[in-house]
Length: 140
View 1: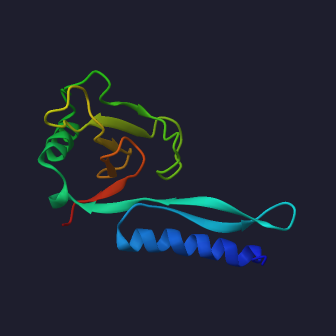
View 2 (view 1 turned 45 degrees about the horizontal axis):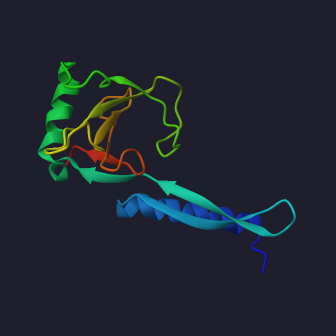
């Protein structure tokens, strides 16, 4: 059965919108039209949200350091995050910067990061090294 392209787009947008409203990052598939009139599966990714109070204490420390302008515990902290994964909203190069969230017991930087946008309090948390993100909600 072929799905008209307008419904495929609406379906993909509905999956994305529901992931944003529910607050959990989503990687789902939706049908989209192919060049030969059939359909193909496409990945739809969304950014969830996380309450500031729900972050690990080390993320609070990292956000404090970002506000203060450092010093940061690792040389890579503050470097440009290029968003190659395409999960975060598309922005110009240099818009996002990454910072380590220390993981107790990890022998290296671990997988946890805060990625900060240029706008004030536009901070995203990832616990799985950029596979998914949650925007930090400072009101809860």
